[in-house]
Length: 102
Image (tube, rainbow, N blue to C red; front, side, top):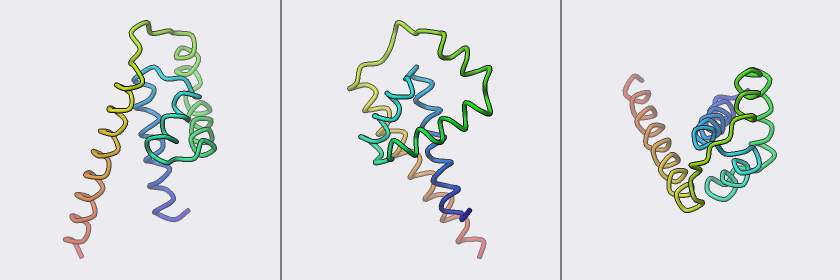
């Protein structure tokens, strides 16, 4: 797998983990990442499936728990945009540090 593919999958995993913090379902996460980060739902579903395989106990508890204080779509949208922005800034800093080493 190329570095860019691995970093893309890592980004999707990171965004899914953020969705989990906000108690989103798989479907909500797929929709949010599609809408706000232009990530195809099949990619999100595939990465989600692998996360479930690696963390069965967590996901069993996660699916059973219900959070009554769920965020509104507007709040979720704002948070995802911030996550994407922060991720891009982090990538830019990492890229500049790597080019400084060369």
